[in-house]
Image 1 (cartoon, rainbow, N blue to C red):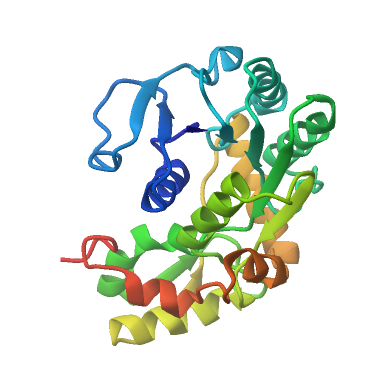
Image 2: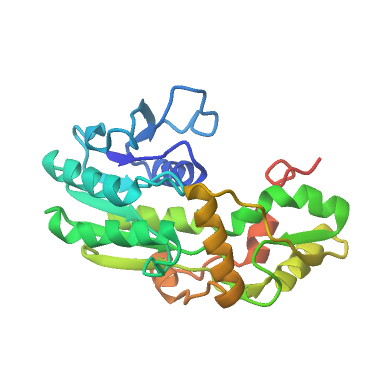
Amino acid sequence: MIVVTAAGGKTGTAVVRALRARGEDVRAVVGSARPRPALDGTGAEVVVADLVGAPGGLPLAGADALYLIWPNVEPSEAAGAPTAFRAAADAGVGRVVYHSVLRPQLRSMPHHAAKDRAEEALDGVGVPWRVLQPCAYADNFDAQLATVADTGELRSPWGLRTAQSLVDLRDVAEAAVVLLTEDGLDGGTFEAVGPQPLTAPDLAAAVGTHLGRPVTAVDSRPATGEDYAGRCLRTMFDWYRAHGFTGSPRVLTTLLGRPPRTFADHLAALTSDDAGLR
């Protein structure tokens, strides 16, 4: 049995689906009892538990492995994730895989700093562990595609000059399955990076080809609040604007046994419903 937390989010759902496609038994931990249509039909056992409020109380009985995803830009991660790791050790879980982020040591971003501190705690937990460090997802642009099709503009919150090595979420999920199920990887930190460093104009060109119409990249600074999530987003986009967010696809290629999907591959696989197109 493999336990996946934050399983109602897009990352958790993708990991659950990838595990079930391999025939693995999965306990999908969600934060509330509201309907979860994305998990329906997967065959996973869906369990409600308060990861954020009570990370030491995860439903880990009989679990062989834990895939720990913390809710996105949630302020309790630095303390809560180590508590969940210790709970896994106490429950006799044989393997913990932590969903981190590419370059967590960039501590100017609060959510990166939280993941860096959580990674630091792993050595003292007493359970075999692995870490997956994805970069930004190609999927982050999917919700914008219907508007892009209407307006011909792709809005970039990190400007037009610097690049990102966007990774397809399906590749992240497949890499997570490898780390959860294969031997010989304990104590390893594995980057999950897409194959191409792409600027916003590069992305606009690819989307234009996909949609069959000209698309222009537009610099669009998003409004952010002063709460924790707002500070995370503001500092993240400021960093991307100044430095980009790129890396090497070599590690992900090795984990997958093939090259990661390109941004064009990602677009080609979208259905009209995926992209919000009608």
